[in-house]
Length: 142
Image (cartoon, rainbow, N blue to C red; front, side):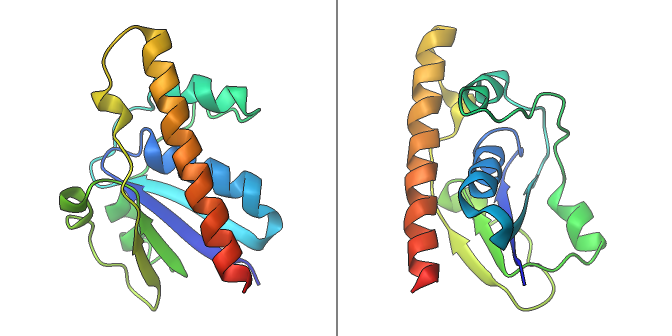
């Protein structure tokens, strides 16, 4: 049976999208994964480009609201917040039994500089997310 994972951040525009797609790539058929935002916004175009470097195309994907998933009574095995501590505390509680996990990653919407400089910073965050996911997947396999 697939493990259901939801990644949550503020806008569902960058960190949660990267985590969702990287788990889909790394976890394969063992996971059903989604992402959502507390206040959904627009996809970060630089995140879209960085994921394209991985062969992952999310161009045109819509962001989702956490509140909508709760209203639909979606159930997850893991709800993982990928924003800072203060923002993670704003994440509402999901119904059902699940493990809530918090991983803090830098918010790409705060990056400044040229597009290339921003892309380099987003690549770093993507790498941090990928490393955290690999570690987590290894711990689940034990």
